[in-house]
Image (cartoon, rainbow, N blue to C red; front, side, top):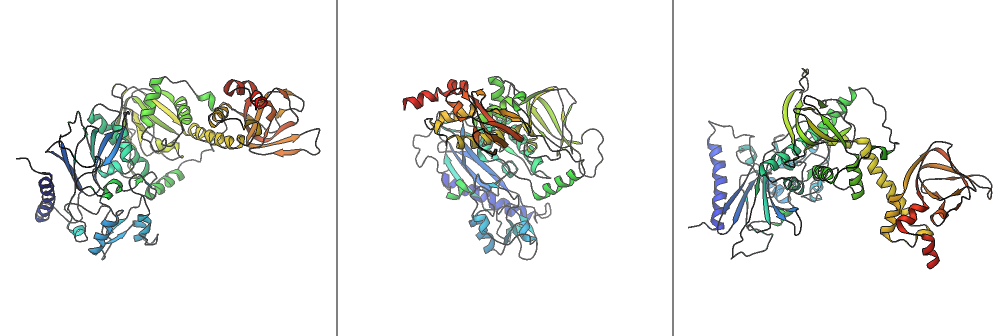
Length: 563
């Protein structure tokens, strides 16, 4: 007969507990002191298409559920991380005599305060410290585990780090399309949603696993001096037939507590303190580079991309934290700013230790990741082969590397060498920052233009259209922008620098600053400027002409007359 869900859960629970006991008894074969391991498993069973998830530690299982009328999947956690971020786990450890402290608290660099962990919204929240709460003995600085449940650790078990699994059972539904089971190294820098977003790009679960592992590995290289265990299983669920006697809430499962939905440890997006110190040390050994010149015309660097090009780039950056909050306009500019690079076998794309200034997407080809360990003399090979990026248009695999270079200048953590001929997309940090800055400038400009009486009749989308149509123009110190009495048709808004205003109708010259404007009447009709405007130092303006205004939003003069 088919075991009931309760019997399955009891068997899974007993299996973990007995496995832990057997590990303790096998002391002649293994050392069970300070050697715990996590465990996550998914058992498929009846009645109906059901699964039971058993979890000990901070590895994780998630279910990808199809979003209606979309190709996207949304994550449903099937396990809850056993870490000291959870107050119930902390309480158990403390009741067994254990201490809960971060490394900085152990070293006296931070006050002992548990409220900082209670204030964190678990799941998708970003933890910027990279210094999680850990379990410590009251008698010394050990074992220091970040997880609060494990198998095979006698010392930690005495402090409440036990091997009893949390169990979750649920019946699969037709909208359930994917199960991901992965170690904590995968989720250190990637959210549940980011993992699913990567997996949905592929028709082959093995290819999906390789892509997630590659992305995880790249993030570990960027933010840490080490890498954690990065292991993953991806299961595609095809044509799930729901049981006719299915019952219960759609997204809830037997054994799933409220902690299950939000009980994930925070996701990191900053360097560890050790990595930061290492970067500072490497920077100090390099020659000082001149400051980047941010004043350049970005339009000269933009190239038209095909819909296929844009789709491949969009897929590659979709799961990246850096590109998460960009606007649609910024996204289009990034597509246009991506530089296509053809690479020959043996070419060095990145050299370890050199300052990085570009982010790369593998469009096609294979690229080796090689690292020379500290204290080792390079032999010209690039060091030990630690990873291989494989890009393919046929399989929609487009891994990326060098993301950290978009945020700030830092020495490269590894060398990247082409194993085959290939194609890359490259984005320079200066261009990326320019795109972000331009959009911020236009947001500020929109606030100022809302105040103009001649633009009061515009609705929000018309104002957005007008701002997006404005041209960025730069002037050197002393440049004559417009002359009093000159016939013109352009409106200017100062976004950087200052201008001197001279007029025959006023006495001493005055100074215009950022967010001041001139040529307002030119938004209505062609006419004569009523003052002379001269740049004081390098100055940047947003400019729009009357023909552009009338082409984009119609005649403002007609609107005013009709009002």
